[in-house]
Amino acid sequence: MSANPSDDNPLAPPPWLNAPPVDPYPYEESHDLRVGPKLHPTLDGLLPYIGVWRGRGRGGYPTIEDFDFAQEIRISHDGRPFLFYESRAWILDEQSRPVRPAGREVGWWRPVLDGERATDELEVLMTTPTGVMELYLGRRNGTQIELVTDAVVRTSTAKEVTAGHRLFGIVEGALLYAQEMAAVGQGLNPHLSARLVRVGG
Image (tube, rainbow, N blue to C red; front, side, top):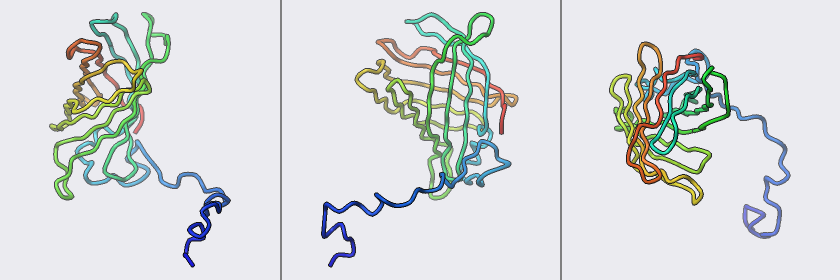
């Protein structure tokens, strides 16, 4: 007789089918180093980025008109050796009023380890709801980060994005970045840049 009843009767319901409900997710994630789990020691070099950031920027590309946008970025951790990145942006008019939602993006930043010690190298995944997933390899130099795509994966309906290059920095307490993109037959060209101030964490 097998220890698993479903092995004897493959049509029997799995043991979890009628199990009682579970409690909410029990592990905390935080963008505030004063609360929540202890920061994993391999993330010490990325500590200045953890928080909620909000600000404005400018976008454009050879195939579109320039535009102004606002953005909120949340960078958090759950005690493990990676950061969670979430970005929401919205288009602004000439009076800085919101016009419509713009780009959204989620991802993970992971330091490359040498044994249990973090190096200055990073592996970064970025994914958009428009069907583009980018794998970046990069390096941290103090509070500056440079990322270059190693691979870009697209769905069949996504815009043709083939490469990306991003620079991040903490300058006088603010988060600044510049992003270049190669897409729709164009080579790498400036696409987005912004300055965001810390509003949480």
